[in-house]
View 1 (cartoon, rainbow, N blue to C red):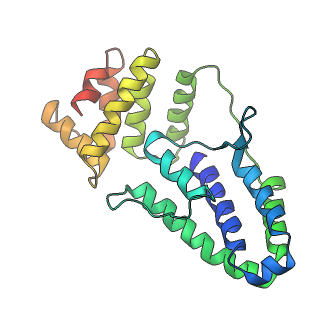
View 2 (spheres, one colour):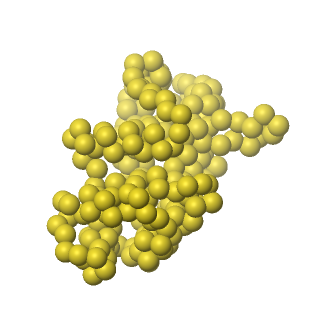
View 3 (cartoon, one colour):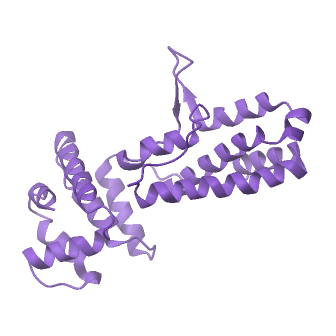
Length: 231
């Protein structure tokens, strides 16, 4: 769900930025009004200081900063660092593709394309909201959905499991920091493959298909913090 909503926000940002490139659109349309409407969808303003705005959708620590840079109109430089993660590259590719396609549509359809697109996104898309009382319940639903056949990789499941094992906010932050450090260290390496090699070298031989199950059984009733630190 988060990936789809984030992609929609990137799509809206691309439409907004494409408007300023079309001289015909600028002449015919109230471009400031359209941009303002799109920005009100993407951002929320602080009550105390309305000049400060924050994305309505926040991604994780690894992707959040670049995602905000990508969708913010005051950030003309949308490039990513030379050692950018795959997710940053994917977001930039999506933005560039949307910019190219929307610019062509705006040139030919003017306000019609923008109006119909916003109407479809705001009034015709359906979202399913599942409300739970605790983060632990949310993580259990995450695993249950995967058991129903959705394609989540082993690394996603392991991360979800170790985060669920945190007993409090401090421990959750420690686990998340250790996980981020691991990602930074192995940058460019397949995460699932790395975790499996780590498991084989420290515990026992296991096929990738059974890796998550083995980790869950091993740490279901024991502390997982040290395991993540060693990763």
